[in-house]
Image 1 (cartoon, rainbow, N blue to C red):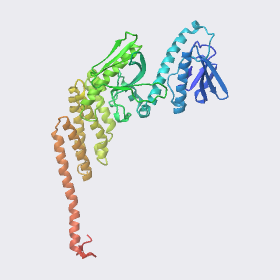
Image 2: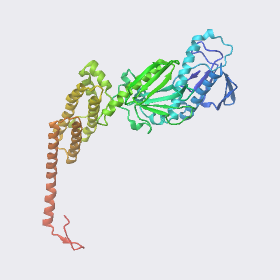
Image 3: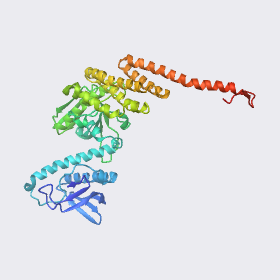
Image 4: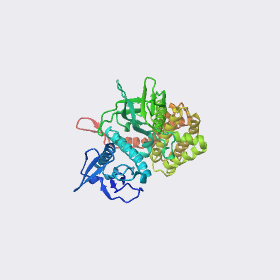
Length: 462
């Protein structure tokens, strides 16, 4: 049995009746020197000065255990004992040729299922590493990344006279969650950035790989862009099991699984990824947001719920009163994040299928007005003491905001007039600050006559 997040292997004298039964011994996997097979059913493990021999019920079970242990040992070697797999229960590896099956039938059945799941998860994690995906995604927030990924093993029909299903590893990563039911933890407003992915990987695209050995790092055998998905469905297979059928108009792809639940999972993921791809293509800025949570709140709880969320975001970013700021940048920097958030939400509303003009109008009425009020308060309380450099900084901020609004066909005279006022104030402040300097130069020239320098030119030390 594998325990402690994949770092320990415990063994029993007989099949345990309960999961918390005391084992006969414990092996720390990070201290295993070597692992080999012997004969048809044995695994030989060198552990310090001692050799362990474990005998499985069949060659298939022995090979399954050998593969699991090899993957664990590689992971421990790569990450250290703290970074190994998270599932904890699998079937006992002890040789128990004289056990009585009826005595522990439930435990054995549960352990067989757990071993299959455990092996599948380890194989998936190994594929992410060998195919060069893990090194790109390991630093991304797991709560954000997990619902945006779909991967697993399915069968693909071999071409040729003799046809049978060959095992392929499939991978799909999307900007937005791929699951049908998005929990509160998954309800972030961000889209996954494609630039953080491997250079060969495009989001909302299904890749399928050959995985002939545990260290097979060959590139994808094929890819299926889902933007123009015509249909994704689960079809009962005449040869047994179920087919995942993906129709992209120009070609139909089919993959096989023994379980309808697995095919259904892929159908949902493909449909959601296709919708995300179309919405991403329809976006007119690079700030497009994930508005699934906003839509859910607006439709289920009404606009008041958005007002609460907006005020929370605002209070989190704008922590100072405009009057208490030593310079305008203390307000403009966090306000830039709020401005980008608004632009991303407006973009997403218009790109969404179907368009959410109701939410778009609400944000223009409330969020935009809040930004305008912030700018007005900032100017009203600081215009007398603000420096010309701060005026330029504010002017650039307002000009960029005005340009972004124009993308959506919005023209707000307050913004335009505000830019004119900023330009006029800047001109006056610079003019009045230059007058003393110019007068001083003229006085110096009058009081100190020019002198001829070494080049024969008239100069003045003023």
